[in-house]
Length: 560
Ligand code: NOJ
Image 1 (cartoon, rainbow, N blue to C red):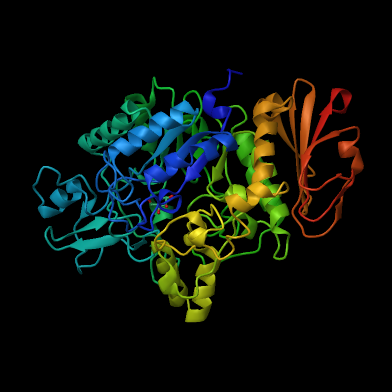
Image 2: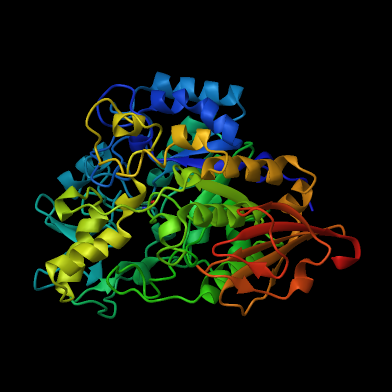
C-alpha cells in the first residue's frame, strides 16, 4: 500500500459558516468568526475545515445558489478575510476546503441572466433549455429534489429551463466546453489561493440523458423523481476525468464528491489511483429511513443490520481502491444522536458511541460543527420558523399525500435540515455566544448544558471524549492499525451490537457498540485477553455492553 497522504491521516471539520460565529452582530456567522476559532479546531486535532459555500448568493438554498464563483458574499466578509483564514489555518496545519457547486448556479448569476435573455446570445446554451410540449406543458414530468416541477417557464425565451433543485438553481449545460472551462477556471482560482481541497456538490446530476422522457409517476403530485431519471447518466465519467486533469492533478489537495448511487463496478473510475476524486460521499447509511428516496413522509423503521451492511459495504468497496469519508452528520442531515438511538437513550453516551464508530472505521472522519458537543435535533413550533427550502417543499408534499397540517409539521420537524443548522453553541452567554444580534435561525434551547464552555469544564463531556478519540486515532500506539488496518465486520447478523475489527501486521483493534437502550450480552471470547483503549463507560465488562455503551479494545498476537 502507498504511504498515506495528509488528508488520510487527519480528521476534517465541516463548518456551516452562517451558523458558526458572528463577529459583527448581524446575526449571521462570518469568516472572521471562523478564524477566531482556529485554536479551538487545532485543539480538536482537525487538519482541514470544509466550508459550505460562502460565495455571493441570494441564499434561496443558503449559498448553494451561487451568483459568482470567485468572490465572497459580503455577509461573510471579504476576499482578504479568506486570505487571512487560509494563512492562519496553515500556521496551525489546518487547510481550508471549499465547496464547488457546479451542477447549477443561482438564477441571479450573470451567466443565467444572459442565457435567459434570448435564444441567440453568447451564453444561450449554457443552461438546459427546452421547448414546451405541444399543449404548452413542461418537457417532462420530473419532480425537482425540493418538490414541485423540475422545469420552469421563461417568458423571455418562451422556453422551459431545467433545475434539479429549486427554480432559482438552473442546471448548467456541461456539454458545452466553454461552460466546463469557466468552472475549471473558478476552481483553479481557489487552488492558486492555497486551499486544501474541494467538496463537490451534487455531481451525479451534471450529465443529462441525450433524450428526455417522462418517468413513472411516484407521488401524489403526478410527478416522477428527477434523481431516478438523470443521476449517473453514462458518459459522466468523461466529464469527471477532464475535471481532474484540468484542475486537481498535480496539487497536494483532496477532493470529496457528493455522489449517490455509484455502482461498485464503476467505483475505480470515481475514486482511487485512476478515479476522478479522492473520496465520495455516499448516503445509504444516513438514508436508512427513506428507502424510496427522500420523500420525508414515507419513512420506515430500519433494523441495525441495515446500518451495519451499509457501513460494511462502503468499507469493503474502498478497501483496495480509493478511500472512504466517514460521516454521520452534515448540514443536510438530522443530528445523529436523534437518528441512531432509541428515544430515551442517554444523549452523552449516544454521542460518544457514534464518535467511537466515526474514529475507528477506516477512512477520513468528517466531524460536523456541533457534533463534537453532542448537539441534538430541535423542533420549531411553526412552519414559518423554518428557513430550509426543502423543509417547505416537503411540507407541501406531505399535504399532497393527504397528511393534515399538524401531521405535516411533525414530519418536517423530525427531518428538517434546519435541525443541523441552528447556531453553534459556544457558551452560556445569551444566544450561546454565537451573536450579539438576533440569530438568523433560533439557537437551540438546550445551549447552557450543551456548549463548549460547559463541556470544557466537564471531564466526562462529549467534547473531551472527542479529543481522546482524536489522540487514539492519530497519536497513539494503535494509530497505525486505526489508520491503515483492514476492516472486518464481526457479529454481522446481530441486531443490537455493531462490532468490527481493524487488523494490521498481527495487531488489531475491536470496536463494539450497543445500539440499544438496555444491557446486551455477547460472546466474551471476542475480547478475551484484550485491553481497553477507550470507552464511554468506566470499567467495560467482557461479554456485556450497557445501554449505548461503546468500547475500543486492542488485541495482539495469537488472538488476532
Ligand atoms: C447538496 C447540498 O449539500 C445541499 O445543501 C444543497 O441543497 C443541494 N446539494 C443543492 O446544491
